Image (cartoon, rainbow, N blue to C red; front, side):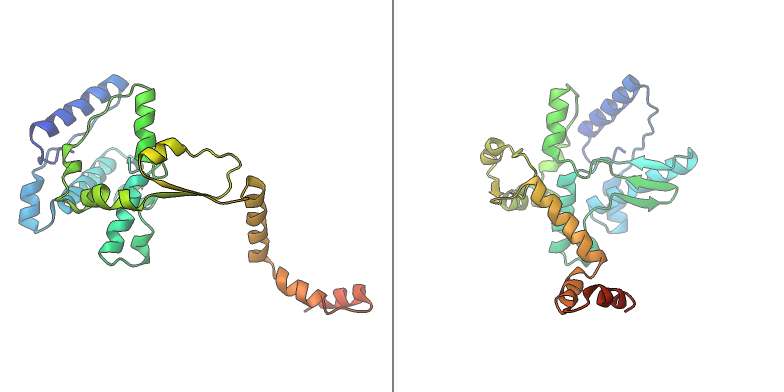
Length: 232
């Protein structure tokens, strides 16, 4: 979708998508829209109007071509930005949960397979595998709320808490360069995490603690009392 916001740069991006699709032999559907005019007419923010235009176009294409699932490229950074944005404007619990992995849309389902992958990991993958990409220059414009959250707030919040993965696989040097605090929980390891998970599952499905307390009251004829207790 060319939103008609960035002029020649948007035209460049559209052509890049066209060339990439041709290179992979993928059918491409495009839309050009004057989002600034739509936003003014409907008294919406540019971001909201652009989103409405995109998803209306997605729905239309999906229905016309019987496409049941559409994958979009929201990543973990997008999800964090959304959560902070929702909290800042006073969201209920639904907003604090962030972007859903899937959601229904008129014509099918929107899926977000990259939602758990960070932007840094995506860029690193592109670099290692020589995958070309283009960048939207408005992403650095802090007049937009989401961009301001990305540029000003998130860098002050980032921290990593390692709680037992068996291997210390956190890139400490990269985190240090980026100013990201790393917490390492003493004594945590993969076996401890596994044991805690199993214990949690058992406690959630059976009254283990109540049973232990009851067992501590048994004195004589324990076997008979246990059999009798089963009927309670």
